[in-house]
Length: 383
Image: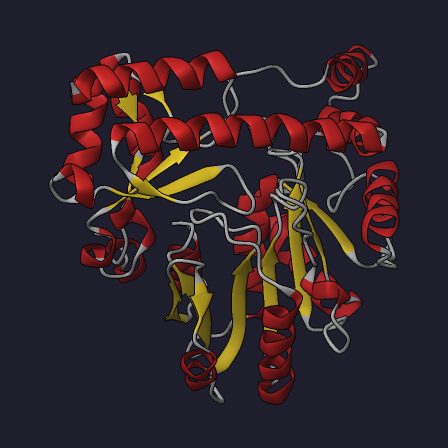
């Protein structure tokens, strides 16, 4: 009764942990959504757009004003020259952008390289697109890849490689040298880099995010994905976008049109206001997330987890071995039910769940009092 594609992967473990957290009244450090308000100015912009009756379909690939604002922000932030009329597609979140991008370029028999641990959508997206995912490991402690292992993954069936930087779940920020190495392989094999850069404004300790699109030779070989969700604390608005060459953008727009038609019109109006926020907003964002990271890092270390400070994004990937906890899926359920703190089992981020058996991911996109409450619950549980 169901397709072999649908049978080949499970439902989202992350969203399942949110349901479990709700059932137990646990603090939800599993799913990555903030528990603090979005900036007042962009909320007001969305309300005003609705009050002005901007409630109908927008242009399928995004309103002109929002696409212009997206391109202007890319130019200001990274010096990238993007044509908003031929290279930008506005989507229903970065999640839709990823599946639309893969469906736009992948044919049955193609391969898509995925770094693991990976955000759980990437493997199913490749399968739904008709591709075979090919996994390359990011190695602890700095979550680096083996250049020889990566090179061996490329072949004449490689259509794309997915790069998530800053990375979920590890917090890794790919270096310029690493991106150069990936770019060289993409150019050599005629592959496209699909880059999920949704956490680009969340880097710490002076580390800079480098977009793959800015690497020489990758201008027409990159599909850059981003969105409003994380940077502006509006994960429920579902507004994302892609940058790509005009040829690839045309294909993405066609797929996007038949997937969702278009992103919410009033939220795109608010997006224009969001993207025009001053640089001070992003400075304050990084400072606030650095504080949250450090609070949660210290908390998890006190509890006894083995954990290192992430360079970006808003997750901490922990090793539970020092605590003697069972396999990650059972450990996550114990922490949710008994400690009152929900996290994500590391098994969700690996092709072979056994590779993540001792791993747990905690999000820190919460108010500091929420994080200290989680710390206290974990310490009480630990005894």
